[in-house]
Image (cartoon, rainbow, N blue to C red):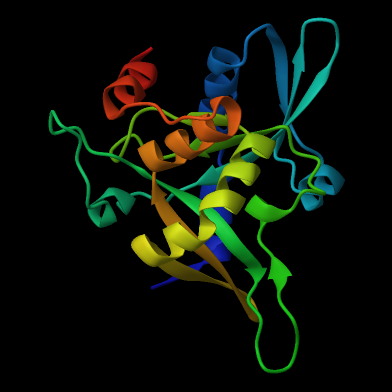
Length: 198
C-alpha cells in the first residue's frame, strides 16, 4: 500500500490539527507552560513542536499522524473488545534501490534532536494520542525490529521521487518493548489499557 507524503503533511498542518496537538501535549507533558509550532528550520530537523516546561527547558517533539480511516487496517482487539491501534515505526526514510543506498528511518536515527514522539490519530479512529520518549522507543525498535518485520505489516509512502517504509506495530507490543528496555520486563495487556485510560 502506498501513501502520499504531501497529502499527509497538509492534513497535519491545519489550525484545528495544530490546536489539537498543542492541547494533547499540554495535557500529557507534566509542568508544560507553553507549546509552539516549530520554525521551518526546526521542522527540517525533524521537530514539529517545541514545548517549554517549568524552569524554561525546551522539549522537542516530533509529530506522527495517521490519516482518517486508518483503523480499518487494525486487526487486533483486546480482551474486552477494545481496538488496539498501530504505531508507525519507520525503517527507511529513503528506501534503498539499485542506484543508491537508503537513509535510515527516523525511529532508528540516534542523531535526532527529538525528545518525544506525539502519535496522533483522527478521533474517529482512536481518541487518545500517545506521547512517547523517543530514545526509549528507538532502543525498543532496535531490539524488536526483526520480530516486528516478520509479524507486522509494512507499507511504503511516496515522497516525491523516493519512498519511505514503515512497520505498523500494535501499540501494546510497542509499550511492552519499551517497558522491557526500561525495566527488563513487559507489562500485561490489562495494564496497557489502564494506562491509556488515565
